[in-house]
Length: 69
Length: 208
Image (cartoon, rainbow over all chains, first blue to last red; front, side, top):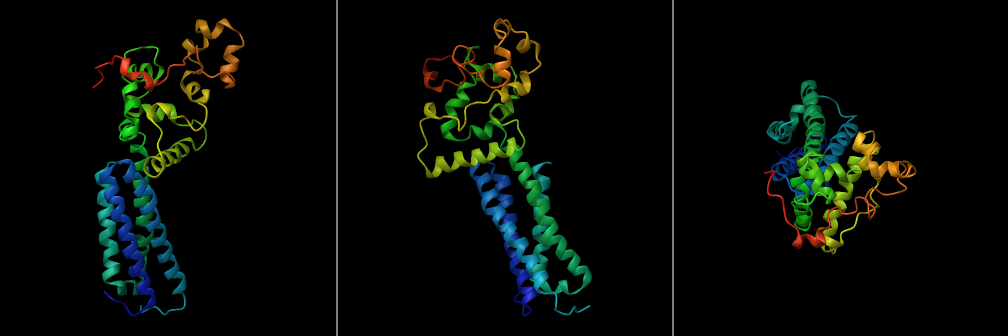
């Protein structure tokens, strides 16, 4: 799982954060109470934003790296 | 959209993202990059949007509002067997949808009213868990009740426009419509929830 390339490492981190966000969302959709609503908006929203921004940053920062294709 | 379909999409997204977490080298190809964009950008946004929409829709339900212990007396007040109780009369006669009774009257019918109502709800939860919640009978609205919320349904209705009390004074209807005289003023529709006097009330058993 460990990756040598900084791009791949950032993709892995953003993927893990997004998976956590999706797990929070899934649990909140099953829970359905005021606390679930708060967790969804607060924690879930935060994880989604961080994960997506990290993914976008990894794209921008990898601009100079050559493609293997 | 049904919750199980959103959960299915969430599970699929987790699987797809998992591929990139365990095999990040697949992004080296053009197809891999496009799939990564789908998995790490488009799908999470779609999942969050659909989840947020579902959560907001659920948060409009009477059951959701009454799930906090402090709101129990307000739920009971909807079943008071007295037509003078404004909230009870609306709930029992389906003048508001029974499954969205709280939201229908307590949302703001201006632009972004639903969002404002839910932000107010977040404040309720904050006070409930981290502040000192007042006794149910001492709960006050953040702002005085605006007639706009009543007029959203009643404006133009014959019973409102031509009601004997409403037309007895020619200045009353314009004042109500301009929110200068409150619909829930004492002497008009002043008994709304009246949770402080519930122990003496009788309750309607119908309605499921």
